[in-house]
Length: 540
Image 1 (cartoon, rainbow, N blue to C red):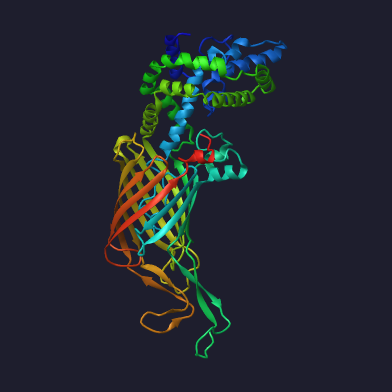
Image 2: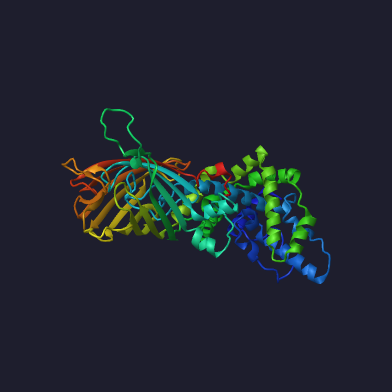
């Protein structure tokens, strides 16, 4: 096979990965690409799909006819020791390499909400984003936006499907190319994210009985004492459901766009033009070192299951084992990297894919909040975003918050706490090909509440201006009713390893408890472990 022919054949393959190189079906009745492999997320199975389809078709027909064919031509297309399999080996491996880069790019998505929501003490996010972490994220935020007291909040965020996969041990830590377990997983678990926030800087106390005096001369016995309880109090739990998010790598539409960009991008085609220079040494390595295909075993797999699923699994295992062994050869790795024009080409491919994601993002969010010395609240929020490609992203929030728990009979407030609307504009300032990026965010927030905020004064607290203790505790209105306005400007530094550092400043006309305008600063750090999935052996 000459270098020129190799380049031409690979260009044809990239234009139509289902096309079988070097032969035509032996029967017009052979399907082009069977359902068992046509949408298989495994690159090897997808690239070799038509070869697998033809082989499965012929084996099934052979079994029905009672004949015993050797299928040499069919198996030559699947055996990496045969020259017919070389051309498809290169893009199959290249897509896998590119997918690793995609996992890094996902960590720099503009739609992800990794920290706590804006109504918690310590939050750095005034507006909730439409997306969430795919695997797990950990965020540490310091500051305050709508609260009176600055706080430090730690937020854990995880996907419901990842929790399910961990418990069932079904491809745990799988981020991309995950095998689906059915409708419930695709439509309920995958779109659902759960997060928990802990207030680290808020101390509280609990009352405990005592048995007497430890020291002192006063004869009065002490019957109780207030014991400080530590930091780390759960301040809120949030559940999010993504109705529509074209950035989600689990969705079939995203994977199709990704594969289409990798296989049809002009930059990648330009790289394939020079692929002939690397084809001959790659072919020589495969012919000399590739593990031979067990032809009897693959025939038995196709014979055992006419649906093709067993065949696909067998071939995927063979290809993975063979490619892992072959990629230990430093020369082969260098040739493939040269053939695919190294990492810079892949950067162009995956950022081109992300740029194609233009349109709507819709998420619904429920939050349960437990602010210090304030009634618990339940909030429902609708999140809508529109991505304008190079012009940035606009995100809108609309929310209603209600008081939870038991409202005292004589209370002068009802269930309704507040309603709010907010908007944020995000734009990447640095080039998208850089490993470290900066994103500018400008946000505005409006909140209306019919009554002042409610403050719970704990039992044993002395009434203001007196020395009279309040044995049963009390509730007081604090602050003012009406509109709360907040604006924020924020710079987020995004590292390629999934580390995000938000730094923001904000202005508000008042806060939840205090009157008067306020200028504050917010800073945080978050780790998006979907970008570090390889640390956990994540399946890409």
